[in-house]
Length: 456
Image (cartoon, rainbow, N blue to C red; front, side, top):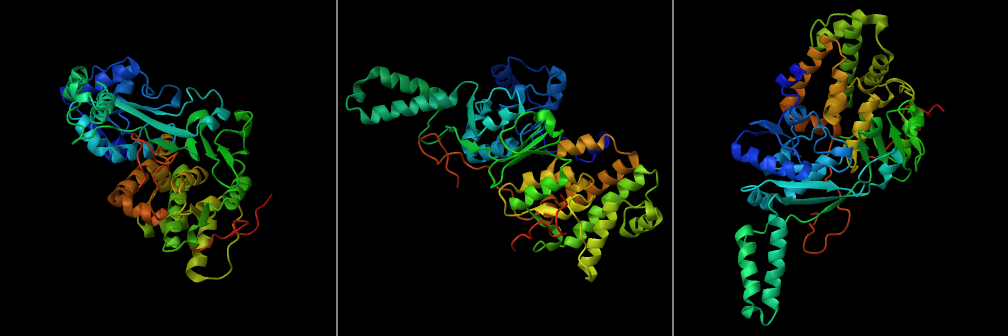
């Protein structure tokens, strides 16, 4: 993994903690949340305050996420907003944390100037004892305060200010005035610098979880289903239809019925042929390196010569995508690629306007794992796991490609591949009350199917 780290493709964009004051604040929050502390004088944290170095020190990389279902977090600076989320157990967690920090940036700036903010993504399920329990998770509520209870004290002060302003005899209540002064010493002037963080709640309708080997839950769609990476039978009884990755026809039908995907080659404003050619290169490199064949170079001519050299050893997925590219460039008969063909899921992407676009593209990366660029972008945990088993030649090619092609223009690459922008987490309830926050193509070709009828 050293090659990935040196290229900035792993553990990148983390926040460095190296001052005694910040380490002290972190330890106060860590003791409050877990009863543990670190002896490290410097380390790096992600958006949730998790540190790989501390995880190694404690021998527990889930020290902020025991049970995997109620992630705790430590915020030392609003700058954590742009950091990744390591060891993610749910696909929704980073988006919720990111939106929470963005919506409370001014208050967090004031609070973290003197203390750490500690909190939890509370979903009311304390332990997922079985896959069916995942369906009890409906909303995520963010609960947070500093280690010295600045937020709770600010709320008390706000209530006392309200009493002072509305009660006729409050001017003569010396005890009330003394309490207000004492609280103000802790919180500062909350009328000028509000420091309440609210308790916003977000929907968790469709999501992925790393629990139980990896499960995709789509319940907020017209025809709900769960898709498991493990065999379906291993999950036991489930409240909705459950598939596994071996059921490619059924998954394709599910994506079609719910109008979740579109063919890349027919997407608006996209050079579909170029995207498919790049996928062909990834498939070609995998086949060559697995067979022990040297890669003569990474430019298009070198890879074209490699394809010629492979000849009859070219994998079916490569040939099927090549037929589709040939149709896009030259016309002719429409290639029939059925859902159980190796190339099928390489030809699709999530609808750009769908609120769960990133989740759907992550699922597609599980079904087309040789597309290493999409796997890296949408599902880094799966990418790192796959990377460990690759031949050295493939590792070198992929790292060079990602560092030079994707990392140089991440936003542009995402826009070209997936279109649109990620949708922020959806509020679970309409905003109300003093402590809640307000949330500010063509028709799809029927997948039965753009490549012909699905085989049953």
